[in-house]
Length: 266
Ligand SMILES: [Cu+2]
Image 1 (cartoon, rainbow, N blue to C red):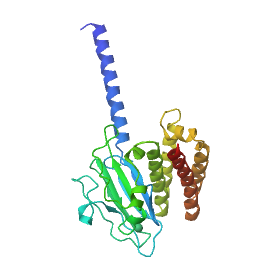
Image 2 (cartoon, protein in one colour):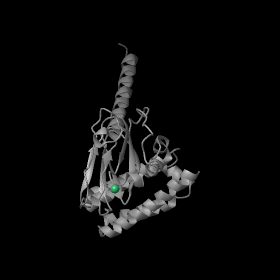
Image 3 (tube, rainbow, N blue to C red):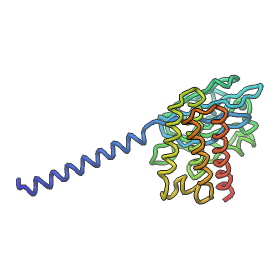
C-alpha cells in the first residue's frame, strides 16, 4: 500500500468515527427522558397539551382542589369512555385526589395520541391531550372526535396546535412546572438544573426559524419572558420562600398564556 492510500484510509476512518461519535452524542441527548408536569386546578389542566417522546414521563400536580377533588383519567372503556388512546398502551386513572401533596405519574412508551379527563369535571372542560411521537416521523393514529361534552371539545387542543408553535409553549410550561414541582419537594438543586436547561434550550433557538425564541421575539414577548425567567432563576438560586417561587412562575406563565392567546388570534 502506498503512503498516499494509507493516509487516505486513515482520513476516512477518522471522519467516519467522528460522524459515528457525533451521531451517538446527538442521539443520547435527544433520548434523555424528560419529565413534564401538568398542573391540575379548578377546573383545568395546564398545559392542556404536550408533545413528548417515548419514555418521557408526565406528572400531574394538584395545585387547587375543590371539595369533590380531581382525577386524571385516560379515555378508555375501563372508565366507561370510548377509547381515545393507543389500544396497546396501558390506561391510567389516578383515582380521586383530595390531597394537594399527592401527585400522579405516568411514563408513556407507546406512540400515539392520549386524551384524558377529570372524572368529575369533564363537563367543565377539564381535559388534556398528550402526543407521544419520535422526534422525526408522523403522529401515529388520529383520535376520534365524538362523545365529548361541548366545554371539553372547546378546551381540547388540536393535533395541529400541539405540533405547532402553541405546542412549544405547552412544552415550555410543562418543563417550567417540573422545575417548580422539584422546588416544592425540596429538590432545590434539581429544580435549578431543570430551569437552567430550559433557559439554555430557549437561548439555543436564537436565529433558528420556528424556535420558541424567534416566535416570542416576533410577538414582542421575548424580553418579558427572559426577564421573568431570570427573576425565577435568581430566586431558586437564593432558595427563596416557595410562595415567591410560585408567584414568579405564575408571572412567567402569564407571559406564556398571553403568547398562546396572540398566536391563537393570529
Ligand atoms: Cu376535576
